[in-house]
Image (spheres, protein in one colour):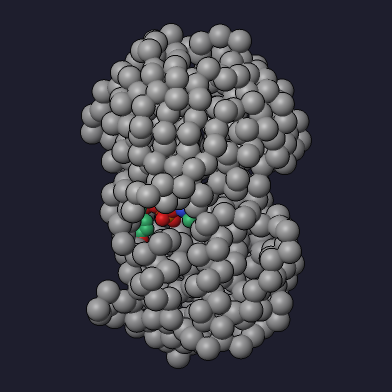
Length: 420
Ligand code: EPZ
């Protein structure tokens, strides 16, 4: 298992290019199960989750080729309609094959995803949605077994705004017989990018950009060629890291309109932002004012960037409250930041970060993808050296993070460890 060694006291300056969005790519790729022929996915990020999804699809008979950031997938000759536990336990997004398999082949056997480091991650909405479209769902031996001669259009309301359930049910409904109305659909850009792709495949969907979708099922769809939207969470991570180090960084290949809640919070904290059409330049010359954030559904502040905000507030001139309404227990990074000397109190679904505590390097452990990003960021402003263990969490969602940070002036290197 790898670890990062990070020296503190750096200031990030220069330019960084953001990769394609992990959470869009993982949702787009299974659409290759919905139609024959070769699908082309451009601006595909090269990270661990992408490879897990590729291996899962490969295990089902999908042919895959990656040339730089251009991924091609061809699901014309599937050999299996099953997503084994081995893949699903590594990555919850494996469940995205469920909707397309039932819609096109009338059957799927998908392992139930486990929980993760920040609490239970139920899939009840995925299953209820498929049942509403006429699928029979059984759960046995830790597997979801879904069957349907042909899905039938219906009305389904998502009790909770869910990115994953929205993606799965939309990908099922486009091939259902008849009309489907979906209400309370998630508005995250990653969901919208799936809808845009399905429309390019011949799906009939109206209401894009709203929480109500009207879908006219079709008998077949066609392959397509799409470009993955920029990763708004990676962009947020670099913007906040630059601000924490009182740096001056131009973050390129972004969609600024996808992270307005983050840029607003950064401006409220006193950062100077110059926002272009596909770049954001940020500079900061002082400790930030404390700014409270509440992680909520899009377009609110993203839960995937709340740990990063906590790290930023370690340098603030006061106390900032960070609340997560999506994952109330997503604060596994707090004890690790406290090992560096952070002064943070936690409560039910929130923490309060008190700025100004002296941070000193220590050995800390990643707990989930975004939490580990906050540890790297805090290590960059701590005195001395910090070891961050289990960086495989980071590798799941960041492409070559140590190289991108190093190019901006961070002193960070990767080392192999004996730790099992
Ligand atoms: C997606 O997870 C992202 N993952 C997560 O990013 C992100 O944190 C999350 O959306 C919220 O924005 C991918 O896109 C691969 P949800 P997802 O369904 O789809 C509850 C990262 O770091 N819920 O929107 O699993 C659920 O418990 C990852 O890249 C149900 O109750 O999240 C949560 O409280 C971490 N039943 C809320 O909905 C369901 O059937 C939102 O979850 C589904 C979800």
